[in-house]
Length: 144
Image 1 (cartoon, rainbow, N blue to C red):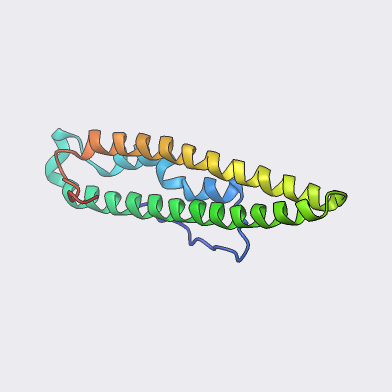
Image 2: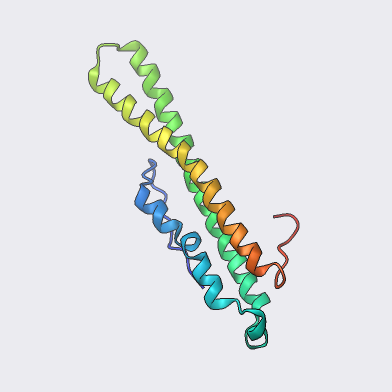
C-alpha cells in the first residue's frame, strides 16, 4: 500500500507546489497500485482483492481529505491576509512595499484557488480508475 507522507501545516500557510506533488503521490500511482495489488479474474483466488481495495479506498479517502483540508485552510489564511493588506493599503496608498506584499498574497490566493480545481480533476480520475478495478471486490460506504 502507498503511504501518505506526514503533512505539516505552518502557522502562516506555506503550501508549495512540491508539497502538493508529494501529497498527490497516491493518485499519481493508482494505476500501478491497482495493477500490482488487485488481481485479474484469472488470479482472483490468490489475493484478497476486497481487503486490498478496502485499504486502497481508505488511503485515497484520507489523502483526498488531507489535501482538501490543507488547501482550504491555506485559502482561508491567505484570504484573511489579503483582506488585512487591502485595508492597510486603503489607508496608505503611497506605500509601495505594502502594494507589493498585497499583490504577492493575491497571487498566492489565486494559485491556491486553482489548486482546488486541480484537486477535483485528480480526485475524479483516481476514483474512476479505482471503481473500474475494485467495483466487484469492494463497495464503499454509502455516506462517502
